[in-house]
Image 1 (cartoon, one colour):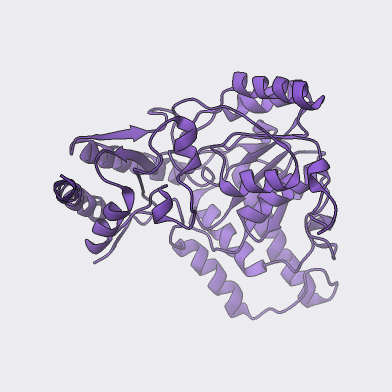
Image 2 (cartoon, one colour):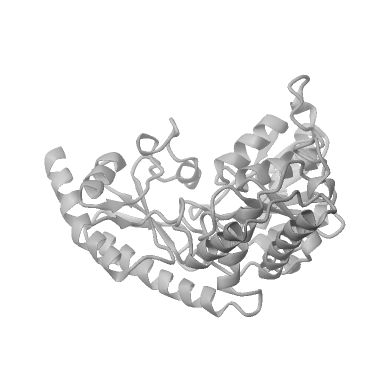
Length: 392
């Protein structure tokens, strides 16, 4: 029997999302939502109902919601749209104004920014926290080096690897005081903690679907009120001219079903219940890991995402631990370079000043059972002790 504990990477499709998608497919409606005939209007109605559900979940107006192909596209839309330097294939995109970014941001944020403009790095503390004072210092450094403040600043809502929830509201306010546009990557947070984007007031927010129980292949860009961006994808007037391309209606319906199961902002009892259960499980997992000895928990101990725990393990690298757990039927993740697509160790852990080659991330989700947690707790000590014995 397999035990899946890598929900922060992707989580199973929620039954409500599956049911919504199946109902839409079974209805057999075919039409372009940009057309005025009856079929087109019916598809448009389904798309706009999905948009309204997404907007209600994060506390914004439906017209602020732009559907994309995923969180990565939404990140690129934020970067290229705010700098005004779309990828043309010619010329020097780095002539755009500088971008402020912390090294703990997701790779899509870091790499899209580096491709668009010079990057001014924001320092973080040992918990991977992006403090407003560090943001202000980065702005001053950018002004001294480039003669201008950044054209854009990134601040993730929460860290995808160690779970630290950032002081995002304070950072957004700091950016506003300096006249800097701000993008918030909320992919790790939406569907796991309350995310009132209307109250936040960021210029752009991005998140995806597949890590909260919706389908893969759809993401969301939320624009601040009155904010206009140069479209990242051109060639059509879809999404009110903000993102060209035929809309993925069935995926939008599925995302709507997933969020609808969690409720609208202000009435998210199920989200709160899932978060409480997840926090109890990750606290238990952390205790079991630390009981082995030579293990420590990373990230902010209190201001954190409820559904993931990241630990450092002395005396053995990540890959053999992952393989040992996998043989025991347990799937987890690590930021180590040997256990992912990357050829470099975790930039998140490196920025925190800890060993970036010896980490383990365990994450739970809506479908996790006590049996999954118990299986990890039973297997982990034996895997680590046997590997340490081989090393010695």
